[in-house]
Length: 270
Image 1 (tube, one colour):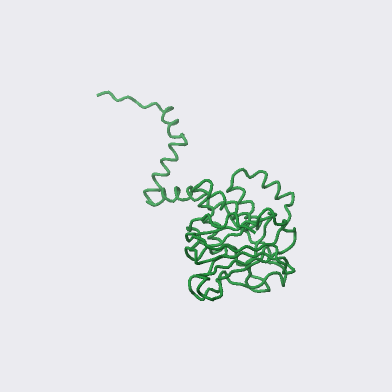
Image 2 (cartoon, rainbow, N blue to C red):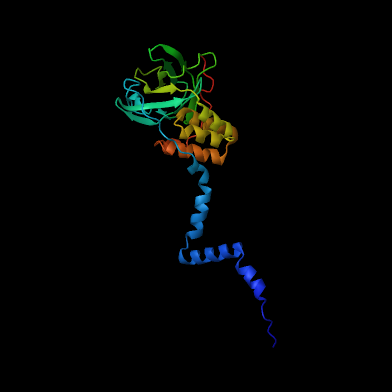
């Protein structure tokens, strides 16, 4: 029987091939650690959600905003809404406080349950002199449980840069037949200017996730959340939903991340 001697040059080329080296190493690692290959895949699939990182800004000065929990009132009847806003520790206690660069920002709340025509919701925005800037109350709603947003209408004056505003959101359960305090949550928002560095970063952000990431790393909570929220409605993208979930997880709001974004309250009337 004749045996053909292998070509040494060809063998050397095969051995030195990067793909062959990778497969060989992967095979060896898998044999030692059966979960090795799975770890590589898991790292790649989570790269989108890990990319967004909220960096909390410094807390507001003393006497800027009132201490509050995420939800209160409602007499334990399931009327307590949740504000999708980070809790900030300050000298005043725990505050629901965040920054925006928007002239008329959107506010996001998790509804405690499905709402019917027996229920009502109210949103109020006041300036630092406690003067009402915007107030709306909506009755006769039929809205499934989920997350609702309240944008400030275009006919309302733009928020002033550097000024803080207090907001409150209330749910009146069965208000026509039961006299009771509404479930209420309140907090503070401050508009800041877009500096040249932030402007340049936003100009280079081409996707909603990139834009939200820029806002988040600069501590601008309201715009980061709104950028993702309005695009979830448009695209139903898994990547955007993943970033939304991750952003809420970082401020201990992950239990709300799976709730649908409802069509309630998109264009409230004055």
